Image (cartoon, rainbow, N blue to C red; front, side, top):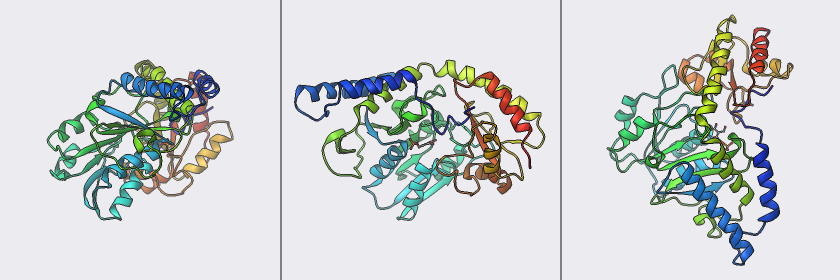
Length: 368
Ligand code: PLP
C-alpha cells in the first residue's frame, strides 16, 4: 500500500506508452535541419504551446530541465546572477531545492529573509510586507508545502508585490499543480516550476515556466537549444509526456481533489481516535497528512509500517535519510520531539478506501 505519492508517483500507463511511441517515431534531434529533425522540433514546440495553453499562460516561455530541483536552481540563481548582493525573501519551510539555494546566496553576500510560518505552516503577510523594500530582488514562496501540505496565499502575495515592480516572484508549484485548483493567475508569476514525476509522468524532467522578458543566465554553456538556458540534446519523449500529464491531470484537479479530500477526512477522523498521535497538518492540501507519534523516531515508524507493506515517508525524500529534525515541523511547532517523530502520509486519486482502513489499523498498532 503506497502512501508516498508526494515523493513520486507511478507512471500512468497511457503516458508510458506515449514515451515508447515517441522514442520509436521521433528519435531525431530537434536541432537537426533535415525533415526528420524538424518533425521532432514541431512536436517539441507543440508540447510547449499546449502546456502553456492548458495552464492559460500567455507571456511566458518554457525550459525543460532534469527535474524540478534543477528548475528551481536555474530560475533563482540564473535570475540573480547579474547581482552580487541585495535582499531576497523566502520562507523557512521551502523544499531543499529552494531553501539550500537561499543558504548558498546568504553565504555569498545576499541578505536573505526566511519568513516564519504559523502553527498551520502559513506565512504571515504582514511580515512579508514589513520585509519588502523597493529594492528587494526576489521573493520565492512555495505554493503547497511538501511536508505538511500547507497552502500559501499566493493570490495575496501577488497583490502585495504589485507595489514592488522591481521584485520578481518565483513559486515552486511542484506539490500544487494538478492537486489544488489555483486561486491566482499564473500569468502574474515571473517564474514557476513543476515536476513531471509528481504527476504520473516519468522521472528525469522538470519544467521552468518564466516570463519572456525576464533575464535568466544559464549554468551550462553549449548549444543554443532551449534558448541557450539548458543547452544539450534533451529527451523529446520526456517533454511529450510532461505535456500529456499536464493536459490529462490539470483538468481533473477538482474531481481528484474532491475524491482525495474524502479519504483525508476519513483518515483524520480515524487518527483522532488513536492515542498519542499528533496531527501536524492543519487545513492544507488533502494530499499530504503529516503526523507525529511523540517519542518514536519517524524512521522507526516508517519501518514498522513497511513490515505491513505500507509505504510512507519521514518527509522530503531528499532529507529523509538524515536524522535531523524536520525543519517544516520545527518551524510550525517549535518542538524537536514532534519534528523528529513525524511521518508524511501522501494520498492520490489512486488510493483506495480500504487502503486507508488498513493504514488506520496499522497506525493503531505502532509499538514504542
Ligand atoms: N519542490 C517540491 C515542493 C518538492 O516536493 C520536490 C520533490 O520532492 C521538489 C521541489 C523537487 O522535485 P524533483 O524531484 O523533480 O527535483
